[in-house]
Image (cartoon, rainbow, N blue to C red):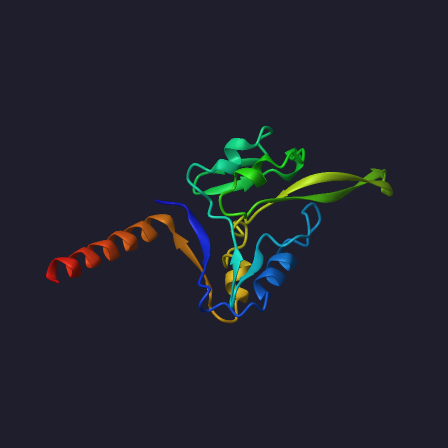
Length: 172
């Protein structure tokens, strides 16, 4: 089975950023970096979120010297605490779906917070792997522009379209 990822239909996206808000809320928990894992971009009159494609041979994971990004079955996972902020993953991602941000971890002495330490944190879509109802962004999308797709299904659909075009050209 191919990897699954969230895909956007820019013809349906209205640019409301509800997907970003849902992602931020999902990741606004202790131990996580409170940052949306997708970014809505505008190109001319169209808008669409940029989301990780969980590539089979993920260049972001291959470029990571510490294993902060890793292949885990059908997704690319994140070990945030391993990130050193080198940004090689950002450069390697062909979709622009990976970022490195500052994360503040508190320093404790007993039950007392005595300070905070600034660390780097790699940020990318985790497809809400721990959320039974699936990705928060897909559920929050008011225009139904987001959906989860399987890489194999996309390949089959592309092959079907290519065969249809070839058949049309043969009839012409």
